[in-house]
Image (cartoon, rainbow, N blue to C red; front, side, top):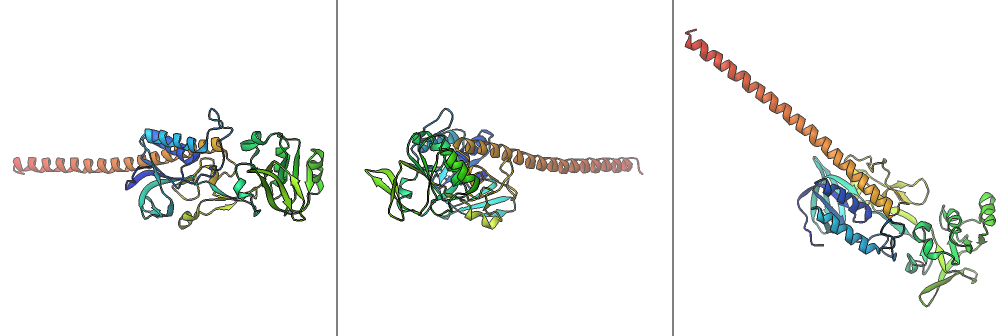
Length: 343
């Protein structure tokens, strides 16, 4: 990316994934000056393809991003490589400072930084993330269909994940891992759906010829599995916004932290919108892109409202000046007329 930062923009978009690029595209088409600042670390980078995205199902994540950048630039928007280190409020907007020392001013901000998946601390898990280790059935269920699937008990949604993945395979095993064994209604539901429950902590994943083949329990037993489902703790990228008073809070699902917003992406901090996984932990690429477009439309409307207020105020001042000049002219004419008549 070779675009150089200008001094100021109508909108600075922080984050260059589906939400950020979609928002920037909408703003550029609205003839707004807009720049996307992208740190280049998308959440879905380990995945081989983006699934469930209409007309682009299976497209590699990097290709989707590159297409989006090209479209944004085609309408005069910019995409700049960099990482934001701080954001400060100014009288007329915000100053965004990058970690390399560059800075830029913006009237509005669209935050689309996504989130970080904090995986369970199981040796070997991270290296298989996005391959045989997955979390979302709608993103990866088809790819692991009819396989021997394990579900690692690692979060409040783990039993729910097991019930979901049962739709894609008849061979699903739930590993309680560090959670208590399911009881009551949960245990009844798992049994009714034919989901085996294994007690005991998982201490590693077993890899043979670059494929996951099972999980090893603390007692040494190895349970053969071809795919493993985990529930990562999802944490929004927002540390640099603390100075504005915008901090992540616990998501109602218990699955992680997010920045709350209204349906348009507007936050509690005036002038700041959010879109994508930074506010909606479960949003897939299509939903994130739609949220970015929605937030951008409302940002543009907010700017139009402010510009209209300023225009009305200027017109009123101009009208008052014009009225004062007219009165002064009439007074002068009256005085000159009196003098001509010797009064």
